[in-house]
Image (tube, rainbow, N blue to C red; front, side):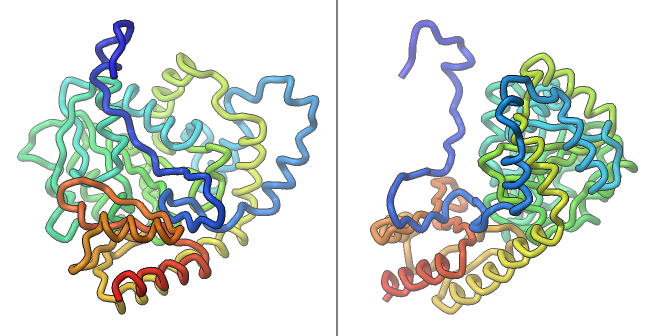
Length: 356
């Protein structure tokens, strides 16, 4: 479809396709990496405590209370924290404010599919760097005989593979790539990885993004943030204030502050997801599936004798939704979100019936 009033950029865009959000009863929804457990009760209390009269007023444009909470949690200064409507908006500002150069940026060939979309939207040249045969990121592949790049971005753990990159490898990359920004997208870091935020004070070209959608169960509030050198954050603030000067709602700000205040609940939920992931991997392996090592709240898996598209279709007939990517190298894999123990059991039982 096209329209004579569209700009050239819009006409040529290939938009990101989000995971399906079907409105079906009794659905086992394991396709969008949402946390199967609700947010901290303290978050609900904080949101309920907002008075109705306050909604006629704009929220704090800087989200100062939430910036302070994040800064204290990660032992950085508030000037090193940037906020946005989910990490997707944060990433959009990063592409426009820090990655738009004449030189191409680098990211993995199998990774978050929003990256090439942003490149198309903001006209950022890019090159895909192939993962290794076992779907790992090899940081040496991003240092190309001294050739400059416009920036480097990758998720850690990677998505949709779930494979983590050790912090030592990220530091090696930073030491060998000082001429451009390195963005580490940590949407799933709390399920088994080690955050690179500990390195931001030593490397002024490092920017780390995170979200409260996954590990803190707040996908519905849309809270994302970045931590890095104050100079990088200033660039993002300039873009944000030229685009949307009031990015987070009052509910998001108070809810985010409360989420960081309830460390015990956060640790409990992450632990439950990790335990369920380990159990699910063991059960799928017992059914003959190959499962990539994952430090996320999802797994990427394949069965050597079963076509992934057919498995997905048969699971859907049984009311279970998983994600399938029609992309070279992973077209025979399914990405499965870790659900509750009951949801995972339903998945395993369905797969037993399908495989026979």
